[in-house]
Image (cartoon, rainbow, N blue to C red):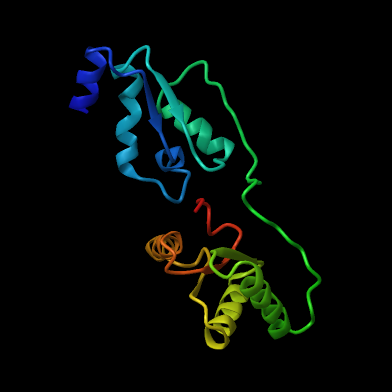
Length: 180
């Protein structure tokens, strides 16, 4: 904080950027106590623009962060989760899970052999079932992720995926919320 104050006093501080503002709100499952120390930032740095970022926070969490920071005249911008670097494909599902996974593996090996990916499932049971089949029957680094795993386990899986130690994550829609 001393460095920020010194920069501010020397008119070298133009804006403050706070990422993952959802960590500031007790409504968020990833709440972090240390983010609450930011509550006086606007008082300490008057006339400095503050930018807040988060990956699709709910209105409650967004409003909570704005209130905690005591911000006025807030401009809010929202962008869709649909990113141009993502490719989505919907295919007819065969009746047997082994055939579906075989189709998925053929697509991965043919089109995305050296790339990472995510397979979304409807349930934790489906994630684990597909994981076991892929782990036992195919030569691919794979893991599963769902809400019932601990935060540390989810973080570990994400980090391994980001660092290409895991090529495919099988997950429910709510488990992964970070970009690679």
